[in-house]
Image (tube, rainbow, N blue to C red):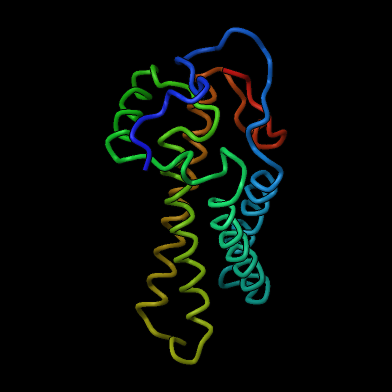
Length: 192
């Protein structure tokens, strides 16, 4: 885990707008396609749960494939896609969150400590959701109450995490005067 960040080529800037308007490539094509495909697949799986079993299962398997691919990409992908670029110690995350609440958090080119923690939490939650979903389709776990309950609970927790993620993106966009949603489409962010 990374102890602290602002080093390596000024990957952060102080809160607020940075001087200049030069853009740099941050999110590679894989990360962008993964992100928006996951949004669509998870939304489809959530909406079709208990309504259209075949669509729900197909979307769930797509989510699982995306999660597994993202885990691999977290070890072999581009700089800002690597887990080593955004996995921080808990006290660094806590310090960042405190600074964020005071509107003085450093700006990061890649994921900030809170965003990195959210990526890990979402990947873990969605992986549990997929595993319990698959378990529910097997003879061994068909109708087993704890599996059904864990699947439902994990689904609700994933929705809470998604809401927190969206809120964090909006908050960071406002704090740093940068459209992070656009950056996840284009791959470019304002240079430090």
